[in-house]
Each structure stands twice: as C-alpha cells, then as structure tokens.
Length: 386
Image (cartoon, helix red, strand yellow):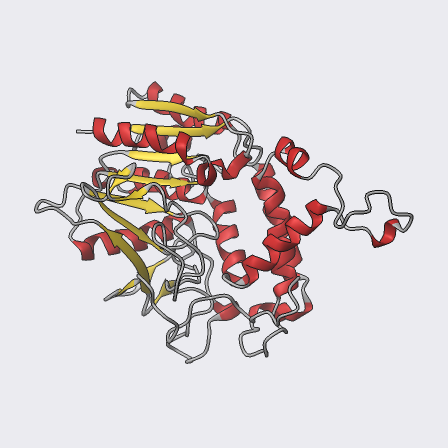
C-alpha cells in the first residue's frame, strides 16, 4: 500500500468540489423496506443531453457497487476517476446525448453525494455511521423515482445498468412497470445466489474485523486510523471475482515482483498478482467509504424481485417492458445462465426479450471493459423500442 496516510473515508463530503454533480433534497421523508424512514435525504446526480418537450427521450443509467453518478466525463475536481461508461455516453456515442437525455444518480446509502452512512444525521449533527438503516435495491429505486418526478420524467425510454445496476433495472420494471418503456439488465440476476452472497460475506468480515472499524463509528478518527485495511482486503476479494482465471494467468502467471524469478529467499518474494490486488484495494480506500461498502453489499445480498410478491413467477408477470438481457461468457460472479433466465422468464410471459452474450476473457467486469461489444447491441435496442 501507499505510504501516504489513508483517509478515514473516501466519501464525498459537503465542501468538497461538486464536479458535475447536481443535488436534489427530497421534500418529504423516504419510507424504507425495513420499516423505518429517512429524513432530509439528498440525491446526487448528473445529466447529459437535453430533455425533449414531452420528456420521452430520458434514459436512466444505474451504477454498480462502487460506482457513482459520474457515468461520463473526465476525472477532475470532485471526480477522482473518469466516467465508468465514458466512451459509451456522449454526443454521437452509443448512448447518443444529442438524442437521449441521460441521467445517473448515486444510490441511496452511497458515499458520493447521496445520503448514506457518512452523511450527517439531521437529528444529531454527526455522521450516521452505525445508525444508518439497512437499505434495499427497492429503496434505491424509490429514491430514483423521486428524482424522476423532480426532473419531470414520467416514463423512462430505457433503464440500463450492469451488476448491481442491473438489479436496480429489474426492480424498476417490477415496481414501476408503467414508468419504463424498456430495460437493459447486464451481468445481473433476478435473485442473489448463494455463491454471490458467500463472496460478499467474506469481504464484509474483513471490514467488520478491522479494529479501526469501531462498529461503524470511525469518522472522527485521524487520517490513517480508519478501517482502510479491512476495506482494502474486501476489495481484493471482490477483485478476484471480477476477473476470470484465464485473465489472471495470462496477465500475471507466476511472475514475481522484481527480476529474480528464482530467489532462494521465497519468504521475501511477492507475486505480481498480489501487488495487483493490493493496488486495487488501496485505490478503493481513497474514493469509497467502508460503511457504504457494507450497506450496498448487503442490499445486493437481499436482492430478490420475488420477495413479498407471491413468488418469482408473480413478480415476472409485472414486467411488461421490452428487455435486452446481456450476459458475459467468462463471468464467474454472475454467470450467463442468470441473464438467460431473465430472457426465458419474460419470453414465457410473451414479453419481448432478447439475449446477447459478450465473448470476453475479462469476466464480470467485461461490461466496463469490452465496450466495443457492449455498446452496439444497446444502441440497436434503444433505436428499436417505440
């Protein structure tokens, strides 16, 4: 890890450069699936393009676990990284902002401007920390619906997202079937599987067992004494699931750091793959918050469109929007059969549903890497939806 002191949290905080963010303060409390309510909720979002007169050209992008509202745009003040779909969104791009009005918001419980654990609790004036309630994917979608109301968008032309973003996409289609004209879930699922929950459980334990986590109330700690080791380890675990075995072998093999591949001091050797994982773990601690990582990961575990709806078939019947389901051949975290299941379930109910599979060695993160394969089917699908 870098010798520079790690921040206690990588969360965006009021007073930091806003970058391209806009903010919506909800005018009433937000009811949560868990039975509680959140007051004074603020949503950070970004937009690209121009909403037309009848608000029929609006497209919602939903980000993945550690993403945020910065789907497109350069890195700069307020945005430590370029947009996560930088080459897909823009004028004359696959999602053409000369035609579409594109919106992306940071999810409820996040740490990049939308109310989450690092935000100040209006009741106490200090960060929520451990007192922030559990949220679900449905809660995130309800917050997005309030944003749509504010923007004057009654119905999205399409809702698009990968991984956890795809969970939001599916919840939009089930919860608000009359508010989505089409959907594009990518590398996602109808229900979180046992293996997905298992991987995320390991990462959570790394954070919870970090002595600097302090039960989630660490925001007043000095720099360098936050739960960065736990968060870094959690990210390292996740990073393994985001790539395929072939990519790890091709990129790193058994290479060690330095030039001596056959040192007689093996205890001093570090494999290149170890350094790669440490780099990504360290990088996340500087732009994300440990509590948000836990909270959002738990929301993904709880994802199940059937919950409280009389079973999966009953929930599927609520989806009426034409659907493009995109899977990834090498995805070990959200295997392509889960995307095929989405397609097949909808076709069984006579809903238009197409399936496209990305042939990439890069695993789950292919939807963020192999954009030359991801973009064209999305462009064609958007054009095909009346």
